[in-house]
Image 1 (cartoon, helix red, strand yellow):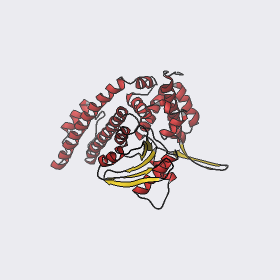
Image 2 (image 1 turned 60 degrees about the vertical axis):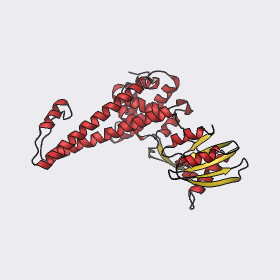
Image 3 (image 1 turned 120 degrees about the vertical axis):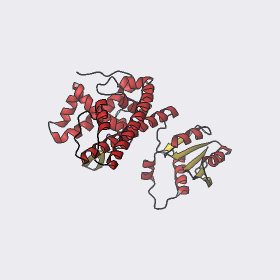
Image 4 (image 1 turned 135 degrees about the vertical axis):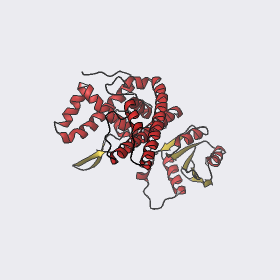
Length: 335
């Protein structure tokens, strides 16, 4: 069994091949796209397994490599930096390091979701970006109106408020052109958001996990689908506490001997799912007595601890979600 380490880029790919004893058999670099490198691997006479580092487009490369061999591993780039901190670094050395880790069975692996799940995640991220653009456009409209001393009515983004915006006359031709362009952008982003939301709603309606998580008070379709999409397979977490580390909800730790220092949360993992989870926790705290008591116990009646209590409650809610996805049980409310 050959051990193949790949350091893959869009313009070149470095390959290092070790035999079953860990000795180097071949090392080369192929210029151009992935096709040349895949052709060389397909012509290997012996059985082989492959490891490469996760980067942009790693899912597509994983699918193509799986056609050559079923034993394909994807390495976690953050953990690789902790293993190899060398002053001498290039693509060939990185490929050799990966091949050695594969030979030693010490590859820090990442979970590779199936193609449909990766596309679902991309749609969730696409909607988030559209919503952020729409928010920036709304802020631009508010800023433009305030700059000319125009008082804005309540419900500015309702149908009545939109009619008022279209009737606003700013002093001068250029400010009026800016307002017109911003309103056109807002209409465009709202149309895009509605279209992709309809697609996500269709996917969520077919997902038992989304239906299950929506039984939690305050958890809507966007939060539920983000958690389900990024969890993918809940059984890959042997303990529900591991999900907290995956979503970046655990605190940073710097401990040595009797000294133990905990900092802010790591914020590693999917930021979109973490953002939606914290937003949903605010609603869940208001609507569920058990979560509200959990929040108030950590808060301790101190206003300065509200953010800490909110994140801790979101972490607790996430663990409950993983347990629900594993067991298939609906939310058991304390209220």
